[in-house]
Image 1: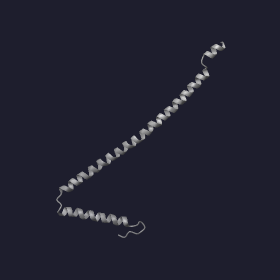
Image 2: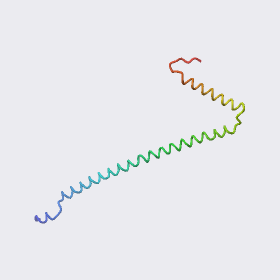
Image 3: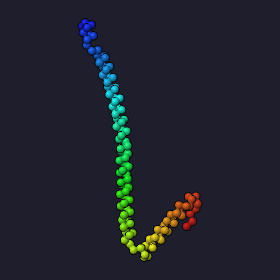
Length: 110
């Protein structure tokens, strides 16, 4: 081969070096794109989980409170049954407050 033919053809090492450089650049671009996509995905998934949690708690709360209030509204209020419920609720509340106020170090006297 003459020098003119070698000079006119592409250098194989230069071609390999260019290909490696292009591959490295593509990998950097891919990593940047993946990082950017992940940064958008995390807030969206966190928002989704927050919405699911809120809706589940809302449904449970509604499912417990609505029937209770409906039942309480349907019972006549000036009778022994309602007065017993109210007095029992107050006694339970007082007992819970008393138990909470006692320190764990003090002996319990029954």
